[in-house]
Length: 210
Image (tube, helix red, strand yellow):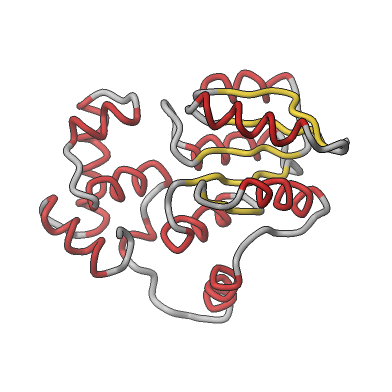
């Protein structure tokens, strides 16, 4: 039996996944969480076979939580669930320790297929992402400035690149304004950009936002 934990801040999505998984005889949901604190709480004392993790979680972001959990459970299979197109976040998620990446626009049955594949030791990624990873391994290319950002910094950077204000980001990520401003300052320092307008231009130029 494949034991699955579902972490997503939207109750309807969690319920939908549980109903989908309940139809499978070889997969069972052993827990769920709506925020990063509850994920951490579960994995301090328990484990499972596959964690389905939303990349956008209140509190710590999904990629930050992923790194914490992998330190406690290095063999845990983590499947990232995201609203973002894979070309924007998939490689970063895989670098952080995930073994699969699936968008919320995917067909429901694709989630079941992905759970089985990563549980068997495989990766669930598209050919495009696989090719990108191969190029990184075989290339001595210079890293882009945004690649130096931490998972949370990149999340804030991405939202700034979409034109969101600091207030909107703080609300969506359940963070204080001062915390978001601190991330923004680090982003500007690491990328050499000077303003939100430059962040937006950079993000569009590098196809990091749609």
